[in-house]
Length: 89
Length: 451
Image 1: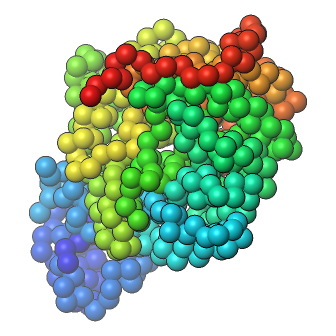
Image 2 (image 1 turned 135 degrees about the vertical axis):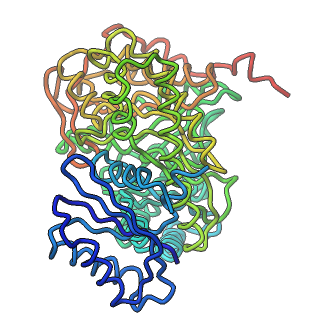
């Protein structure tokens, strides 16, 4: 299953390394990464494949949220379908 | 890979602009629950609802977590209870209370369908059923009631209109200690729809399948925010932007609706394309109208702005969903919209303006507090006026007014939560009791003869 991880916040140092390592440890495959800066805010978007994930969706979402608190950023995990539905005809 | 702006836009809509799925409503047919007497029917109804909807809340919460979009309300609508209790109407309260217990057991905030459809005439059993409404609404917490008194095809049942004026007043009296809260759970319709997911007017029509999922989307904040970026756009461009925004909002609703139906073993019914406000700042339909250039909602120009908004929402939404239904349009409940509350408190919007606005949007005079001493016949006359607008314009109209016991213009009623608060608004003083007392049926309009 494809999902999207988004990370937003003000501190960008080492964020990609921290989050990708975290996903790697849980066997979540990163298919694509992009990042952008919106004003003061840093945003990173990762497309991931959870096919081999060692966690189910709810558990991974919760752990990512916790990880976000630890690194001082907002981290979310969402089904890719919501973005597909809203932005593609 | 998605465009990163799209991903961030969705997140911004959800986190900053109150984009949410307003309600996932499960429609349940109760026709198979009819037994020989009131008590066993009530038990069968309770068993049926608690069984079919047992996973509703949990499923909605899971969907919300997985897709990252809040689902604010989980609700149930049922077959109009007057039909279920037709053989023992005086026992209808037993079924009403069983439904309220079921709602509590399921952990849902409202359950709709303590309803009767009397648009062409009131049967004996319906007469007796209607009489139970005030007491049942006073003694239940989560049950909602609605009565359809007219339609474009049949005309307006003025006997029922007369009776509903009295029932609204009785309901207020029996819930006087809570500012007439019972009336916030009672809607009088013309052209009621059978697949409405929104409360208090939801019921599960008899033409529907056994178990259906209907979803109501929302997002006034998202539309207002989008308009902020085009302060100088002409109204053609503004309408276009609203359309595009409504499309995105509705697609989220469609996705959730289909997924919820599949997980709950129910049919996907409809997506209701409504802009439903809440009392929270940033979630107001009134503020969209003000964003379009009105100083305050209620001033001249409000009806035109609302007509444009309502139409653009539909055009964007229809393209986004395979099945559209319910009320689909902008809601203008006074107590549930911070912009409306502020305008009404400042005396900038009148009942007459609200009535005009109901000609061009869904639904009707909604969540409006009026003086507690408003005569029954005046309430009936307000209902008749709204029903006439609905009947002639082939649209749903409704009246949900609260004659706040012991309160008059200048006072305020407060219900808390989504129901919000409202200043008591003045009604006209002239007496309509002779007109209402005539009763009978206002015949269906000429354009109803379409066959």
